[in-house]
Image 1 (cartoon, rainbow, N blue to C red):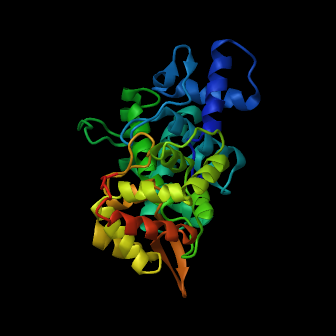
Image 2 (spheres, rainbow, N blue to C red; image 1 turned 120 degrees about the horizontal axis):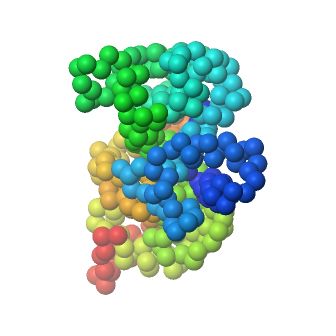
Length: 349
């Protein structure tokens, strides 16, 4: 698909904050700021990310809560696709296949929702779409009359245009669906990135979202730093230190020790499905770990920075695996040994 892996990042939030400030102080906007201002003006719910008269870039959202930053970022990316006409033909699809009476502004939200729906479907099915297939499947979505129907539509609503007009130019339900579907896919995206069975800790941390690196730093109460690379460096220094051994031995629950021992016995890695069979899946864990840390066994170990999930080349195929980074394995082994000592204090993490 054609979305970046992470949309709601700090640079984009600062872009929103700056544009909002300029808009509401009637200051001159650059061309890109003017484009974003149009989206901000059309998006219901932007007021919820204000603190006083300014935008709060530090605001956190639950997985089931509407996130205006993410909605704006999705609209921004779709608008860029249309502006650049990449993949070739998406601009014509946008202009010609939605209701002819609509303006481009009115078309943008349902079109973005269709793009995200397709992205979620692609990730769920585990396939990568070619540009041609992407356009073909996108066209099938936006030309399907059922796409614009609501579950609670009344029988006398003849088509999607009536429904949208009844709700206003930009129905909030479109954004709700867009956000939920996209947020649901982000967790899987971050869990299928390339990895190797011999990955080292720094490389593994570099592969995961900044949100998860931040959550690990919060869990271990590490000093606040501004850049992801500095946070990763600090986490590596800590997790690979003797101080981490004692803390780990006290914070590992019985089920976490069982999962780690299973990985250690298999030379540090295991096919993900086998680990799930032994320890349970990650159902209920969401993407935003800084506001709602994972509660499953695998999720808790990931949040501690001990286990990483991704797709690795094994012989002639690629498998989704769980792995303890190679340089972290001695730390984990010693922590497991200490946790079994009578003086060890178990904590469910």
